[in-house]
Image (tube, rainbow over all chains, first blue to last red; front, side, top):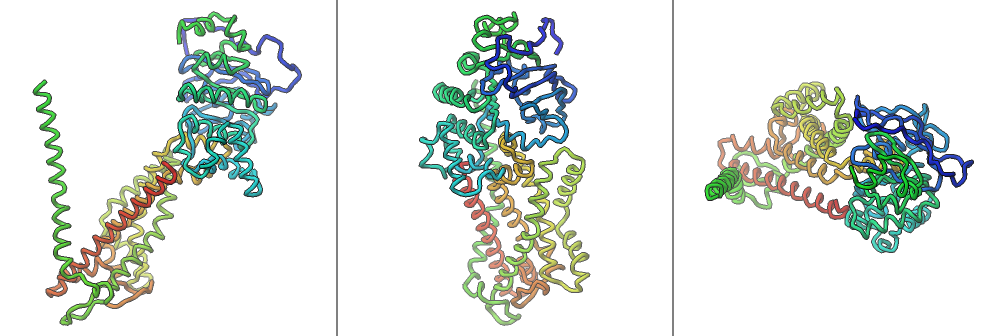
Length: 274
Length: 279
């Protein structure tokens, strides 16, 4: 992580007034560092995220934005040799604290991955999976209702309602990704983490995902990692810029894209590197 | 430019030739078994038990049923143990114990089948005091376990990592993720692996010689000796009687047919699952 360029200290909080400063923070990360074995991938990251906003993480490849996203639901736990320092509080509770039920926490913090990963089951069973394993419905009709509701939320229902019991893998790439979103929404998470959800999709499918994010943000707190700066500008309320494992700038999106405070951010946004 | 093309053509030709050479023994085996076996194969062969020397006719009904019972017993023992071991090996692949298990499985896989027979003789036949179907099934099951375990492990490792992450992100525990997503995703391959293992042990003679032994009569008892196609073929083939030789050929043909049908059924079943799930 040594570099000749001076890295500015991360900005801890958007400087503009918050919509409601008394509202409890949804995600509150304090001094988080992350290690893959000996290698430090994230260095002293602190960020505060309000409920019901969309936050975009941008930065060049390998800057740690995906790694950071995955620390927010402890998805990195399954990597051998991974280690975390610092605190990640969700609704005020440190998810790395002792006695935390990781499984219950992950239900609250849903995730959509870069590459759509539908299970090799039917469309219905994909959406029903989380409901079944968490025993969230008590009857067949309730289950079917939740599946329908989730597919509608993900704007997929009309396309698949006549073939719910066909394989999910026969769908197009964009549909598969929306299915993964529906699957994540079915267990009623409060936070939705999206790791470059549209990077493998064509422009039309991408647009549908972006519209979806716009509609979902009233009910969910969304954090989205993206390579695409225009996408970040379009969908997010706040943007965090990562560079070499550090959080360089965290700001209202409209401000960041018009008048970034840091030279590094400006250089990146104007395409001078990355 | 020319030389490159010539070299390429020579190598492609050499590969083709190697394939032909490799297939020749298979073609000859099938040709001989078919031509010799078909002559002696008739309905009686499937419906009657062996006749004593001197009487013509008779069949291997008892041995066909015996082989089916023996392989079923072996599968009942080896499929659960093998698949669960495979799951363990793939889930804890880095651990020292897993490495030891993997090494043991590979070693067991390489142990000559006659040695497995001796082992089954020592641990099942001697305590029971006599040859039995159970002992034969046990010997075959011991042979199957490492094959199934290693096949399962390799197939599970092929399941994309993203499926596991998807399940965990929905609040699945590790065990849940393994048994509701990862194993089902690998199931078509595992089924094929199990059937290929069955096909392999169905053709074993050595482990049965002093475990299930042989039986001239029809028996389905688990505690009595039982006939099997392979041992029956062996007995007939080394006999001095022309009629028994013909029976041996017919038995060999039936064995090959069973193995072939099993393999094809497994492939069709796996393909169906793949089609339904769209894997």
